[in-house]
Length: 442
Image 1 (cartoon, one colour):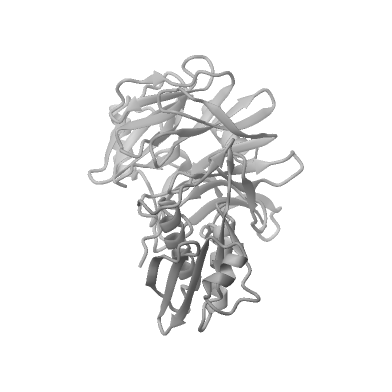
Image 2 (spheres, rainbow, N blue to C red):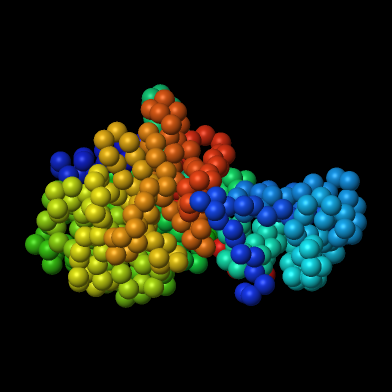
């Protein structure tokens, strides 16, 4: 409950003041993984690349790699005896990895001598790219291995004689948990990271206690760019003018940011005088547009992948429910139909489902529902499961998991059926994840 506790306390404080593609076989919710032989690639770093590819495909729940310890050739009969359905082999040649994928049963080459550029600094990226090629050719779905995950990690900071205090920092890592590094300094509370559609920027909340401005206390949406610089989403000059137009009402807090699919705008919630409403900020012309009214608690907006609709949470019906509206704020209507408190809705990149968090009593759930409110089902539950986000291909979800009040939060990846899941190992606690789009293949 790490993320909710921190965010809730902050909010309360402010309120008080192709045809050959494999057909994935699913029987009664079970996915049958396809056995794939992955021969150690020849050349410099070849084995390292092969190992990364094996790990990627194994962790997708759709494949199981077959050991090549006693197979040093690409003789299909040997791999067939081992039960392989597919075979991947390749070599590192100067600044390229050249690789081939074969259907072991038919002997057909699904692709031959495909090339990926490589250098000493992008070995993992090259391996993930090859994994994407294999995944896409066999499943006919977009690969997700060449992606990043950003998450919130707790840090202890002390300064001179001052007592150690608990803050948070943003960490970024490869989707398999490798190469984790901090991207904020850990001297403030940071929450709700969100990738831009091109993966080059991250929006998040930063809260520095005691700092004030035209906004009031400094808990607001910031944008961190690829060059590691950051800026507040709304400049003081824009906000001063906007405050005048709103009868000089102060801005208490901006939070829960989400980029539009084209990356040209951000939707987020703004707290004013104890209520929060949803706003859209157009970054091209610096226009701030109010989409809902300050009558209740409207929050957690998220665009549909076509950019025409927004799903959000509101307590206007007495408890937290899911609502959908047009991108201009019109046609606001409730879609949730079950019991419990709904929150944190996120639209699938495929557009067919919305995932969300729900609380019934002391139990939390991760669920999915169609945009019209039909077909709701739970796919995870526990002491704390929250903050779900989709993979770029819409097949997987990662979320925050905590087994008890005495355990640290962790990030779990599961497939859309909810039957297959695994913890993404991190150093220290990890919560409130965001998943980047797939990096363009080179």
